[in-house]
Image 1: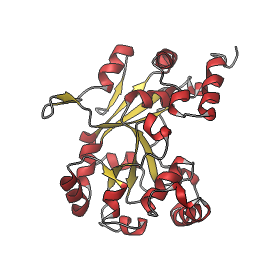
Image 2: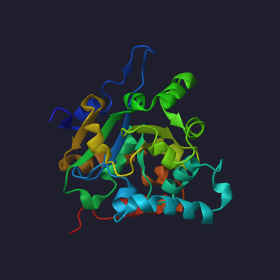
Image 3: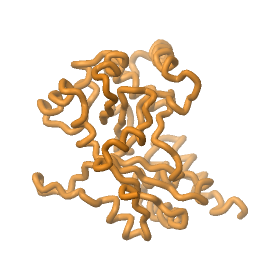
Length: 265
């Protein structure tokens, strides 16, 4: 597959992660790719809402309605669906948002965080978010142009869409966009995180991307490289302790640091 690259070693991996990052207009290395790391190369680009199963499309409204009803009102800057979605996703509620990062090293962390998956190849999806955001309906595209931005914010979308139903019905064709969440806490900041969201809650992103092969690539991480990558990320301070600030992240980091390299050890 032309869009699928299997790296051979650490140096090859660096080249593939930072490939096409030179911006001639700016004269700087500024990548246009969003990265998502998965521990198993067979995992699909499905949202947590899709993985909920059942009639999840119908349940989406009820999940968000009850989350906003029972959560403290001061957890969002504005009482809008876009702020509630970000907070809900952050705290583990199944939503149609999907986590991405600007940082290829943060994506590598999520490829290698689960040592129980070191017997299978991992994967990093790299998607050109600038080009994806050019495929949105005209009113949203105009908003990007007026702001001189490549990624949406909650405030930008709030001007045009105030509900997920309205969002889904903007056009008859499915579309996807990338949106930066408000900086709710240090986890968002340290993970250099943002989201993708589809107008169709039943649309798996990997299927939508098949229509735009020029927008993405899959970087396969051989299972034999995972320990080397993990050790080098730890040395570079890309760890649970940094990416999940607080006692939970500290505990995850220590558990992995002091755990055996192999389950039989």
